Image (cartoon, rainbow, N blue to C red; front, top):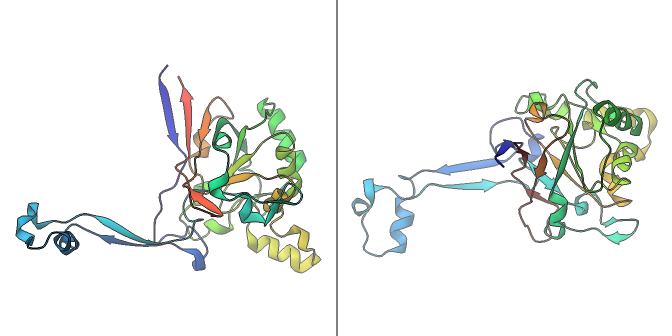
Amino acid sequence: MPRRIVDLSVPLEADIASDPPVMLPEIDYLDHQMTAEQVMAFFPGLKKEDLPGGEGWAVEMLRITTHNGTHLDAPYHYHSTMNNGERAITIDEVPLEWCFQRGVKLDFRHFEDGYVATAADVEAELARIGHTLEPLDIVVVNTAAGARYGHPDYVAKGCGMGRAATLYLLERGVRVTGTDAWSWDAPFIYTAKEYERTHNPAIIWEGHRAGMDIGYCHIEKLTNLETLPASGYEIACFPYKIKGGSAGFTRAVAIFQE
């Protein structure tokens, strides 16, 4: 049976508004002319003119965090514990079975920036698309942020998933979720305003912190979610294996059997 693969991952790119300023990636591109000396150093006596076109290799030097680009967060990112007191697993310990499962998309693009989605919102959207969750479904949330990736307002765009909304998914066996926004939670600028009003610390990172009750992963900075139907495909999001890491880069894709 032929397959169609849809790329759900953004490229790792410098000099765009992909993250808050303190977390922006930096990439130094070394082209073939710049690295000829590197190649020559491995082979004493080799001259630049001996290399084809006098060229070395192309290589990139990166200064990044594990949360740049499209990535999968491990439970360890949210807190030191999960499942009500167990040690939180790191990205190299995430079960691979979690990372290749049936995909489900919730379309929350109509919610205003900063809105915190509720369990009722999730339930209503599942009813609208006619989907019943099964254990290990990968649930991705299409927000208004997806269309703004790389623009100056990206980090402040889109709705977030609240604690109750997240637990609604986790209690039904979901272990990987995803969003095209910068964070699974609402943009911090809105949470900060609400915290200033209420001084309630429980609202800070509430969707992430749901992992303290039930360990789970989520993918952040997805793209092309608007091209996906609500269901009818699988999602693969295997993370790069970083020992003891809080996250790992992933080339997330949707796979259709056609």
